[in-house]
Length: 400
Image (cartoon, rainbow, N blue to C red; front, side, top):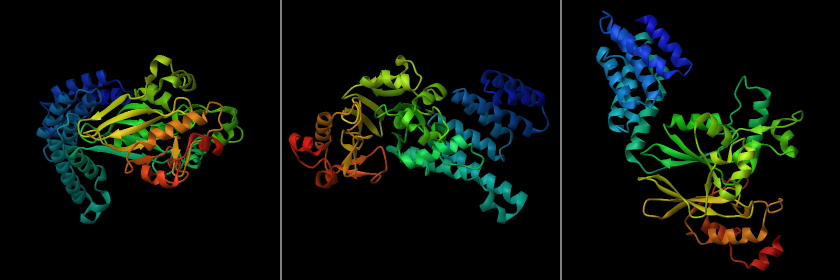
């Protein structure tokens, strides 16, 4: 029984879910007759984890129930049941399991280390899981604005010098990464997800959110990743680097199965830049709709050329159609707009794109692609002090 469990653990470690499940199921059958029921509890706990990773949540819930039945006073068994119930969107049941696991965890620590150790040693992840269940039961739009150096791309002890250089460059560029989804379905899109792909994925997982798409607002390397232009390699990877590949849409697709989406005009360029096949990159057109979920609404794609030919802005519409916010990439910043001196920039196209944004309601929140001049603004503010104020095309051209 224990040898089979160990074999299952080895298979689980290397990602062979089928073999792990087979070993654990055999071990569980033998453990039914074992006098120490904690053995059955442990095996079924591991079986539940393997089944969940294999996306067999209903079976995972059954295995977790067997673990609880074998050892009702074990916090991990209740945690496993909570994880399986959450995957099935049984949030009330998951919350109760997590809460019970937290109580048992605190009791176990108190018995082992004394009352004073409880607040220091209790597993904070269980309290966080309870909070996520509350959030999921409430539903609504789930939105996070991530900043390198604050939320992701954190330089940690033991990091390699190339990674330090990369993350320091990310912090200096002040690129924002966005996660937008539905709190009830726990599915979200990542917008301009690059620099620290593993950190972005890990943060989404901590919040129990599943990434269903990676939208690039435009093809520039600091928004979608991929090959870094030669003139910027030293800035990104240090003075001795000859070339650089920035983690981004390519890694999200290859390593995590998250499909990339960019405007159709930039599909070929993004594919080449990120070492993807064009067919792997989903094209977006003006007016395309990306559903977020019934409690959150949808994202409407606006084609806003100017900074680049395929730049897009993403209108986040709540259920009912009202625009709550717009993610604008490098189309607009508080008080200014994206660069128009690049090879494929277009001054006239940017003028037209700004008129599109000007038509949105004054209360609509604008989230930019960089934190150069603030982390947000509104359409109304930009109509007064930014580039959404009224001026003619001739005046616009004279400004550039």
